[in-house]
Image (tube, one colour):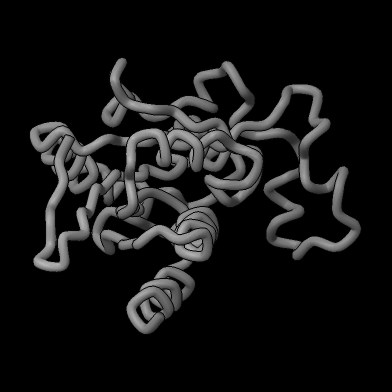
Length: 195
């Protein structure tokens, strides 16, 4: 496993976190595409992500993929839980998207996890909420999380904040993340850069 020691003797052990690069969000014919959402920003980062994943594999840096899934029954759709949601979020949650076990819910072919990669199934924005990610990171001695994927201003930022708040060093690769809204993307980059 790749690690770097600093003069202080502290070792830094990184992992790459690839957030929600699933067919339902990214691919033509996926749920977001069918809802009429612009997904071109998401597809633009695929070449950079491929290069980054290849680099991490060459250095034996562990890769953790998240897949945000819902149940076909709709039991876990936010509109069944919350009384107040922004209209923009309600519109894309009228039916379950990225159903667990379907093409829509899995990582796109161009970035598919390999046997030795790790896939974290998540139900909410954060990769840490009610998932095994923290246990897996601890078991590998990982202390630096490098975030990529989509949507930068929602799931990537929420996961990055949670990781930082529970004690991980964090980074974000700006050209390997994307948001549907460029202003939201820029705001996240400014926040991460400042804080």
